[in-house]
Image (cartoon, rainbow, N blue to C red; front, side, top):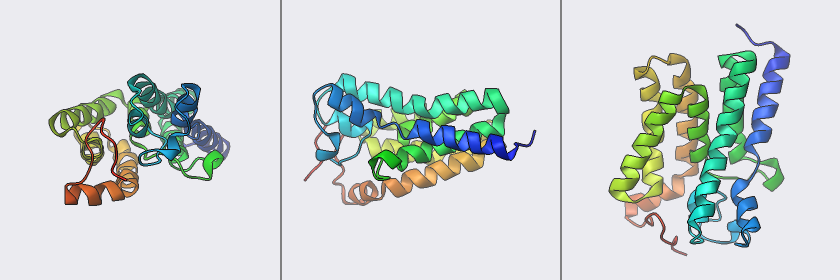
Length: 201
């Protein structure tokens, strides 16, 4: 079923607004950790929250950032169909990257992309999470795990028979690679910090 213009606008706005909620920043302040943008990478995501040493707040940030991708995708699929879910999910993802409340400077998108994939088709989200966990367990480098899982996701969509999700997965993967360009340079130099360790000044 083709989406009406009104439903497209609703999907995009709702998804974007969900994505702009800066859970890492809000939860860190609530926990008395200060402004998360002033430490480590300055990022508002779970990996940087973990650098505060508060694993519970980091885990909660990860969960909330994933939910803000999953909830709009799931809800919009239920209300208006798969096309609306894809649009809303992508809008949530880019809302996380470019939140208007923070001068369009947001997170790197990994947790939100996992949530979007789970919301659109849970087996695809499960593949992403499994690859991330496996790579993180082997190498203890969050960025490497994220980049690998993101790169695998379009292929996984194809192998799972969801050709409609290949392009959304590829768009998010490309954006994740762009947001991780500094990490990629450090990976090449062998300078990328391991999970739970401080980022070099």
